[in-house]
Image (cartoon, rainbow, N blue to C red; front, top):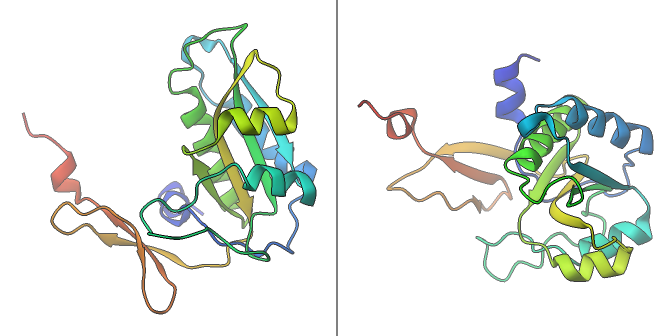
Length: 190
């Protein structure tokens, strides 16, 4: 798969085949992609917590806010949840400015997951204090994002954003539509 196809296929998936496992070895290989990715100032301040355990996955799931554009959505039900998670942390003993490091790392993880036949979702809305307490994350680590992973159970397609509306939505066939602004709208001719 070439890079354009990989990027186009890499959508934010919110429904998974929960019974289809992702191994610890697969999670480690995804973190290896993040490890090899660029890092601001080459500080490499990120740390990672991996989970493919059902009980720990449930704990992580309970601290995440799913689908903010879709009103009253509780997120995926049992059987449709991720098979694994990677919690991306910033080590404050190295720096307190994590810049775009976690975004770069998460994108590398998600592209790698797509190439492996998995899908994923990167979270911004996280009950960080609660998650840190529940899984015992020491104070020196800041939760930056969580990446949910698994075999996709939904179809996600790119559609054209109309009148600036970028809110994603599902049609009656449960196809997840992701509006993207036109290239002509995002390149400034100055």
